[in-house]
Length: 240
Length: 240
Image 1 (cartoon, rainbow over the protein chains, first blue to last red):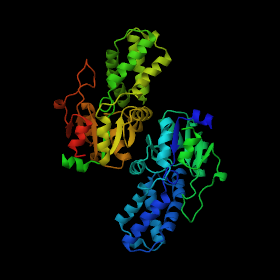
Image 2 (image 1 turned 135 degrees about the horizontal axis):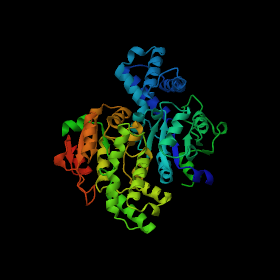
Image 3 (image 1 turned 90 degrees about the vertical axis):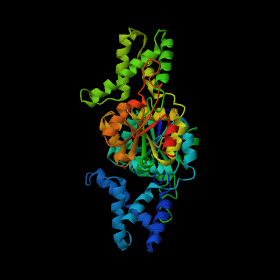
């Protein structure tokens, strides 16, 4: 991996699932809000179904079927639909729904994330690159004390990953060539998008990222320049 | 100042002069480069004249007289002009000129900057908001170990301060109203621009920011919601 480590200058990290444990964080906050409203809800399944609407909602933006909208707005729309389908719409007023949308703004790190980032950042520019909005990411990274050098967001490109624009915007804003950027993610679709835009790719396997009921992407199914099991393993492999 | 501290959610910090000592940093790097080339140059005066072309070059962009260009490109153009005027153009090849343009990417902090920022950041979102490009700012903030929550740049708005766009882009990306952003700068023109865009303003006096030969803006000449003598003084005044 010496060659790769010498070519890249920027490491762009996906956030939901890759850097933070969205499933645990959202499940806990949905469960707490349901208790507050006195509603019986399988919070883990609810989190699964909510996240399940994530890619289709962004796909509609990328294909032009829907106008650009913040991830917060997409989350709110899919939340409204899910609550109605569960037959519990009446139990969650606007304030409760806002709190739920904000669950995605405060999520727990994976154990290795901050330590691995700190090592990688010593040699490379470490950027957060997520489909989350700029404000969401700034708040999440701050609350989680993740040592990124800068926040980037699909919002800056007005297109969502895996469309090429967010990846190319990252290279342009950081004044490097696309192949000098290493995209780190636990999702095949993200790395396929990054590679299509000319970036280098690193898969970090996060077996628990989709919770107990669904299967995360596995290393053997994913094409990438580098495979790692954690951010600290990635730092090892890049010699940081 | 209790009211102001309760209203604002974001503090946006100007960088050159306000957070870092551009005059000392650029002077030292110009002097080193001139020595390397065997050229006799008054580095402090050269830094003054180079910086003196800063506002006019951005004004041409803001009025539409020139296309959008990165600060690096504007610095290079004014550097080329200055070297020609000094009669030393032949002594500085392309590589030397690139190094000089990069002098603006690595500048020393004012002594109070990191400590004040750390305190202010505990309560507010702390953003770098400069006319420097996104890459320049990311490198500068990283090298100087300044604890910002995010990097913003006039580049994201394709307009330079004091035009309203960079200030309004800051509020929009961080999902707050303009009057929830406090702009911190040592330049009257910056605070006038911020106020015109609806932001709140704090003047930090930096008597040495223009070096020994020119006079910095003084508190009594500047209209602002708050006046401070350092970032730690600003933290005191906001009760952080």
